[in-house]
Structure formats: structure tokens, C-alpha cells
Image (cartoon, rainbow, N blue to C red):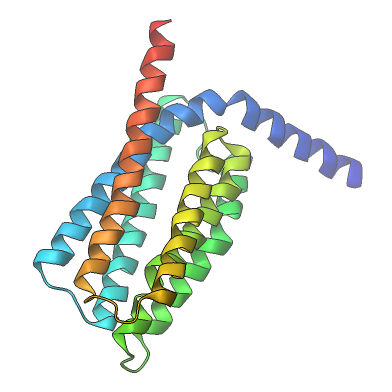
Length: 208
């Protein structure tokens, strides 16, 4: 039984290594999609003046569900284009790596949505918490993807920790509308930068 499990595990690792180029091609449009969605969502939240605790958490929880759904839809399209099975063992491995931190972020948002009104200073801790947990999720998935994904995860973790440290020393935080700006910058802007980088490097590889 253990030998069969080890053989299956090695086969998954071998498949992941063989498909690293495919995953890299799929990551560029997915990352760009997440970036555009983050920027657009932040703009909508700013102009709609979404500024209460529950509405802030509910809005970005909805955006995250849309982002994850869009990413998996694009991954499925890439799998069909390459004549591969979508829900393959490598896909399950990546999903298992992403699930714990993303689930923790979703639970923290849901608890705030259904809790009694809290001080909006507390809600400001959600963005750095989400950034750190998302960075952990990306870093975990990076073990099955191109090496740059782990570094990308560390960027989110570092900025999340920096933002959390800043909140400790700020005596009075600005209104929640400005938290939408930070969400757009990090979850939108960083994804766009990395997406364009992946697209540019992939084009250069194809030209060589």
C-alpha cells in the first residue's frame, strides 16, 4: 500500500514538473484577470462609498469568490485547449495547497459580516490579514508552480506584515474608503505587474 502511494506521489510530482511551462502560460492571463478585477472592484467600492464594517467585508468576500471562480474557469479553458483533464491529480494538489489559508480568510470575513457592529478601526486589520493569508496560499501553491510564485507570495506576506505593523503605530486610521484603495493597489496592482511580467517573459521565450 505504501509503495503504491509513493509511486502515485512521484507520478504527480513528475507530471507537475512536466507541465510547469503550461502552468506558466495559464498563470499570465489568470493573474491579469485577478489584477483587473481587483482594480475595478476597488474603484467601484470607492465611488459607491462602501464604508461600513459589514459591507466592506461582504464586498471583498464577494470579489474573492468571483476571482477564484474566474481563475478556475480560465484554468479549465487552458486544460481543454491542451486536451488535458481539468481535475487532475496536480490540480487537486494545487487546490489542497491553496485551501487552508483561503478558507481562513473567508471565515474571518464571514464572521465580521454576521457579527454585531464593531469599531471600524478593527476592520482595518482585515486587509493585512487577507494579504498575509493570501501570500501563504500563493507560496504554498508555488511548490507546484513556477519558482516566481513563491516569491510573489512572499511579497504579499511582507506587505501584509508591514501594513499590520503600521496600524499598530497609527493613532487614528483613515476611513474605510481608503482601505479599498489599498486593496486595489495590492490585490489589483501587484497582480497586474506580475501578470504583465509573465506575459512579457513568455513572449520572449516564444521568440527565441
